[in-house]
Length: 209
Image (cartoon, rainbow, N blue to C red; front, side, top):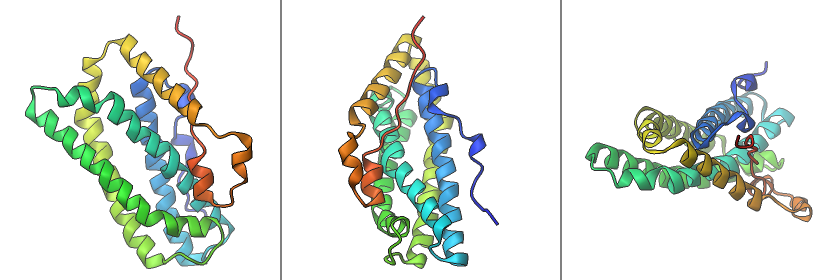
């Protein structure tokens, strides 16, 4: 039985029209990847590190080592600074909480990733109990983080930006991803985590009219 989440519900970055569309797509991709993380834990418990588990693990590493990290950088560059200057103390506190989330998520991922990378590479270095417990904590914080951003922070940030500013924000995101894309000879690395860190989502925005 395939317990993997349905990819058809995940929009493509190519569908994004502006910076906040890109951020919204990033959230949907993260929710999808968290579903894969749950599926990986279930698969390992039932079947061990078989081919399907290795495929799941590689996709999870790819997302959280590249796409999610870029998404957090997008927020730190384009969303949080303006809101920290707000006169609303609730908004400022929300942004400070989100920055703490970013730090905690990075720490949690550093603890999880060696176990997931071991599965992806076909090694025996993963601990299922550690992975199960760590995945639960990481998933819960990720969902809380997304909920806070979508309920409070993104709407306030959108309201502060003109459409041209939001498009400029998207173009900067796309340019940064292109500049970080790997050259061909870097693809020879054997670690899935290393390959993932060298692979960036390239966003193609429609030309301005």
